Amino acid sequence: MAEKKVLVIGSSGQIGTELVEGLRERFGAENVVASDIKEPQVEQTGPFVMVDATDRRGIERIIEKHGITEVYLLAALLSATAEKDPAFAWKLNMESLFIVLELARDGKLNRVYWPSSIAVFGPTTPKHMTPQHTIAEPTTVYGISKLAGEGWCQYYHKRYGVDVRSIRYPGLIGWRSAPGGGTTDYAVHIFHEAIKHGAYTSFLGPKTTLPMMYMPDAIRATIDLMEAPAQHVKERTGYNLAGFSFDPEQIAVEVERHIPGFKMSYAPDSRQAIADSWPQSIDDSAARADWGWEPRYDLSAMVDDMMTNLVPMIKG
Ligand code: SER
View 1 (cartoon, protein in one colour):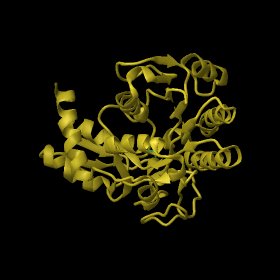
View 2 (tube, rainbow, N blue to C red):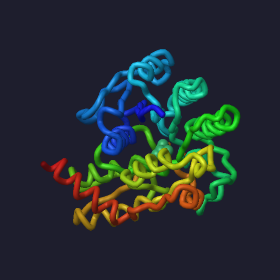
View 3 (spheres, rainbow, N blue to C red):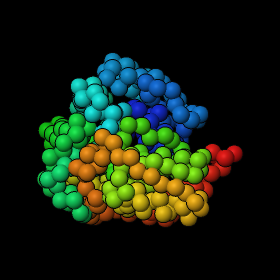
View 4 (cartoon, helix red, strand yellow):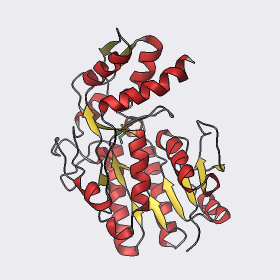
């Protein structure tokens, strides 16, 4: 079998920035090609190329030139941004997936990773400990694109034997990269504002509980799923994955442990309706049983680690 060579499409985003680093640590910097339509957020230790995720020829050229065997396709518009331009969100999120699935079907890739989201669920889904297989009637364009994408992943797997794997990420929190356009982004912004100004106005109301995860857990899960033996990967839509759940009021209390006098206020906007349509907690027993997933961080451990890293970064 050919040596593993990874291409990450959408490497400059919130997940991509950290995933590239994780993959380079695991497989060697030169074996991981980062690519995006935007400049990277951090200095690159390995190859980086500019590419548009909807440019099939451009992607094909990179695969050929670098002998790529696996693609992680992360390029997408997220929930809040997608609502502003549904047609473009659909085009970007779907066309890029089709390109990669087709390249895999043509035998040009051994394996594909594509992120899904808790956004596949909607108001009719059971909100607590949402099961792997349940009602999924999303009300956002982002959720519709993720649900359709999951269906296509499963279809390409069953019909053409494409080895495509996916996780339904909860809200992701990290300090190395900036989020963009998501409904769960408040849980990252709060740290930056608390450290800089001692105050934060949340765009979600105080009792809006959502499933979340610390980025190191998400990166480890992603690479573990991709490295699992194919016969262990029984779900070919997207795996439910849980870290911990909290609401803005609860994270504010945790932040205040580090920043005494921290002041939280609330000004819910259009993102509130998106958050209200999503589950509050996730049952991830399938991921645990099939490929040994287990989270390491809870809310307090995440907040401690965020503060340890962000305070010196922001305050110098
Ligand atoms: N964190 C994402 C968002 O808020 C959910 O996948 O859009």
